[in-house]
Amino acid sequence: MTPIIEVRDLHFRYEDGTQALDGINFTLHAGETVALLGANGSGKTTFVLQLNGILEGQGSVTVCGLAVNKQNLAAVRSKIGMVFQDSDEQLFMPTVLEDVAFGPLNQGCTPEEAIEKAKAALQQAAMEHALDKAPYHLSAGEKRKVALAGVLAMQPEILVLDEPTTFLDPPAQINLLHLLRGLPQAKLIVTHDIRFAGALAERAAFFEKGKLVADGPLEEIVRRFGWTYSDLAADLRYSAQRRF
Amino acid sequence: MHHVLVDQWSQGSSPLHARDPRAKVLVLLIFLVALATASPNAFPTLIIYAALLASGILIAGLPLGGLLLRSMGILPFSLTFGLITWLAGDRWRALGLVEKSYLSTVAVLLLVGTTPLPRLLGGLEALGTPRLLVLMAQFLYRYLFVISEQAQHMRLAAACRGGASGTRRHAKFRAAAAGAIAVLFARSYYRAEGVHRALMSRAFSGRFALLNPLRFGWMDACFAAGVGALLVLARVQ
Image 1: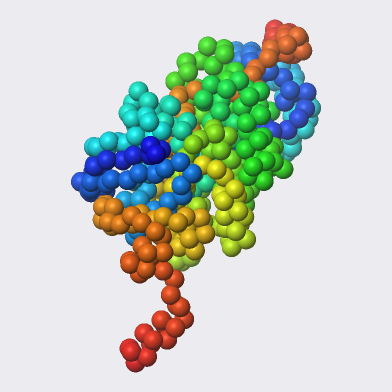
Image 2: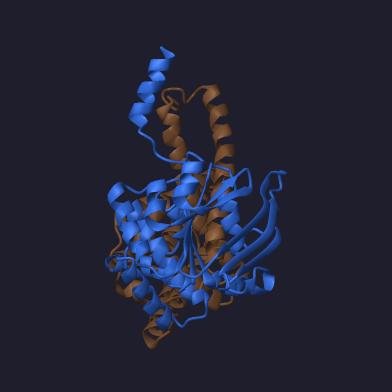
């Protein structure tokens, strides 16, 4: 089966000389959900920003059969929907409806089509009641859902979510989890939240200092890198006993 | 936040909100030209203009006191120049400068408070304003939210660590404030980069398309012609 995302030998260095990505090879297939794990600054977000051409490194990136280059940028950005860590950065129109319709309008839809798609996406995200609200009046969980609706309205084939649980309280996390589970798109989830990742993805890719050091079943990766929630209370008691 | 409030006002529904932005911009232009060319001691004209603005605010359902208060933001500047002109011996001109700048600000705030920014900028573009300028205005407005949010976060962080409490007059506070402004600039820059990335990710190609296209109907034409004529009549009387 042809992968929906194919990355070959990707390198990227920031202007300050930081080698953020160092020879990344990665594939994602249709319908698959993969969690991208790793410490802060390990290159996860830099990696996903390469997928829709926001950042441009050396190597080959193909999305839905399209090479990510200047000629294909518009088409690629229609195929891959990105939900950013901070929803406030994503919501900038005066009303929720206008914000969600922003993407379809940019894709060349007529205003009527854009409204239709926006309403459908808001319904999918269970936010149809907020059509006329100003985005800055929403709660963090609602903002995240509207940001997701803004991406869904563009009907992408792949969803990329950068730290989707940040700022969300547990009920909002569960709502988001249910919502994401019901979406048919392939998903890439950048997260530190192993429970959330485990509830959505079976596969994980682990980044370390700009390298993709492991790619495989999530449970195995989590165990291998000790990237799991231990019994924090027990750990603290143990540390205290040793110290004093 | 001031701009958030004005943004809320612009989402209202009134006969003035319903007018096409081009009609409102044309009326504003006529008003500004008529006001600028009116004699500083033509009090009847200025009173008619003030009454028209007050009627506009009431028709639009905007808070009269709130809008008049916010328009006072111009006064530190106009009073400075007014004072200089007064000291130079031209009292009527000094008075006119303050009156006209204040009325102009009220008029601009009335336009912004009755027209959502994307529609206002769409109207300006349709009237021939270069798209680059319109785009810059749109980004500038959006980034105002970003900067004020960053400033609020920083102020809160400073207050939590004992900043700005009873030390306002000290040189140390001024130095810290200068440093904070530099940090605010850098943080806003990074935040603005995030906004730009989000725009690009949603296939933004340099043009903000409107969900409800502008329609200049006969009501808009009547409004522009009627109010425009009234403004000119008040000016030449």
